[in-house]
Image 1: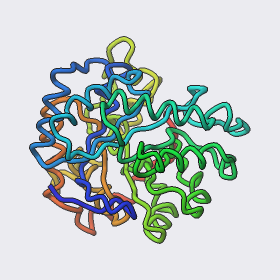
Image 2: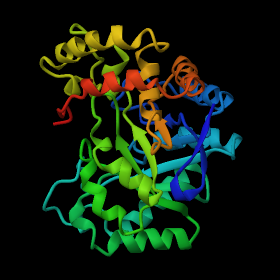
Image 3: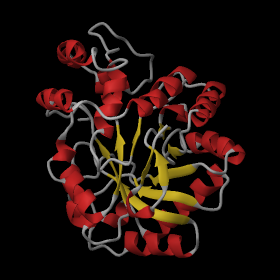
Image 4: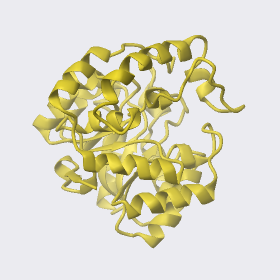
Length: 321
């Protein structure tokens, strides 16, 4: 496992992190706590030291599972997120911050996360959505300052709205944001346009999320793929989206297979090939996932020629709508 510095936090994090949405036990159907814990332990054995969770993942269940593992491994670094009070993802234009992140709410939800995790301080607290209209609001600024002052959090960040990297450009220049988390993968290369360069300039840590495009970039989503009842991917891959994905993946396979251990491997290494990225957080639910994803760290960035070819596979669309 290789390690990188998480921007100006100076935290040394594994460049493969643990995305803990799937182990929350809801929306992603099939997660079992015993296997989740085994997956976490196997990832830690492989050198992983950074876990990203959120209060919204299983209404705190993901945090509780993570907390049980952190108790045995206090050296782990944990990031979590404050869910929007109105429970609307992503943030909508015209909605005032007092409906989404009022001061008292940010503080209370952070304390709830600390209780779930059974720790006194979380390394990174993030707002789970963001609107550029809130940049001048006092609520989130005061909450971040209080939580740092009281020793409840060490650093503060934003989880950027789906496919909207430009939405945080202005707030990063305030100096109040230590880390951002953003969708970045072979299909969504939009953070490269301006955001990643600004993060390098300002020394802001970058967590790359959704490296597999919710599963499509693993190559396992076929036109006839079905999902269990209640699994949120029913909506993400609705209509003819599975066919669209499959057609694009079939064009990618011959390009990447000579250079990597598989599509998932090249997805992770694509993210790690950009110097602004501190860590990438694939969703991990099984021991097999943990072993395969952690192994990508040792293989390093992709060859420049392959990266150049992958640039041609950028796909502008939003399946979250």
